[in-house]
Amino acid sequence: MPGIYLRKGTTFIPMRETPYKAEELLQKLVADHPEMLAGDDAEGSQRWLLIERETSVAEEGDSAGRWSLDHLFVDPDGIPTLVEVKRREDPRARRYVVAQMLDYAANGVVSWSAEHMRERFEARCARHDLDPEEEMRAAFGDGSADDFWGRVHTNLAARRLRLVFVADAIPRELRRIIEFLNEQMGETEVLGVEVKQYIDDAGTQQTIVPRVLGQTQAAVQVKGNRQRRRWDTASVLEEIERGHGAPLRALTERLLAWGQQRGLEPSYGRGARYGSVSLGTDAPFTIYTTGRLETRFDRLAEWPSMSEEDLDELRQQLNTIAGGSIGPDKLRTWPTVLMQPLLDESRFERFLELLGSVYDKAPAGPRE
Image (cartoon, rainbow, N blue to C red):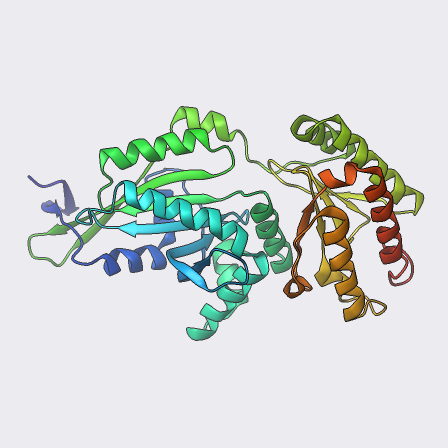
């Protein structure tokens, strides 16, 4: 029996559900029309920017790729969206693809960076003779590219992702796994998208009908409200205490007090679930409510008084004092270290000395 009818005037044309002849056809459809990932949501005006097809995923940031993800997108909030495509005929379109996707996600957040994703996006544009700025504008409208990639960085640091399984038909077993994962994973959204195609008997007309699966009421409650919010000192400190305890809150208060003594007014982020506070406007150091401290080596590299040797010395000191693992290849990126080791008083005092030596090199005094 026909699945749907296409009406043309007084004529009803039966459209029959038809499997895709090859997985590549479905993959290309997703790449060319990512708006389908919003499914049949009547309010689904979500847009995605394609970073790259067949994106390499490595086990470590500096190692060769071990896996290949079908599609990597980012949404307007800078949330990386991993998409894996399978046809119904593929027996892997069940539990195997779930393990595959979790491999990609777990290793992607380690091996990727916002800078890496930006480079891959610009490389794709170059290969296809596209203007990266025009591509971003077409997807998201006007806005600062640097701000956007900053949001991507924040989401990667917070392990905030979206995992999407696309198929022409999603088996019941896979749907149950998707719903379970989406209800259990607080910061990672897990969805299935069925993309059925209907073709008329003459083979000249095609209708695409996408449907999103996995958005159960329980999952909505777990994810909460992801609207961006305005953070302040009180809310940042409360969230740090809630997630990491009173000692880390006290440590953050001491860092902010140290900054104010140097005339560094705090600057707050706008994250939906995770807050941040920087030691000064456009500052190189930012504290996140995830319990991590970020160093903007890319900004420090622009300071005339910061040499390459100074940057590398800072990298080594951060590793020593905070137990970080920042490699020498990260001197133009935004690596983070855990703040927990700084609860040791001797480490904290050494860290303040390190901060002081950095801000002493700031152009025209500390950045405010």
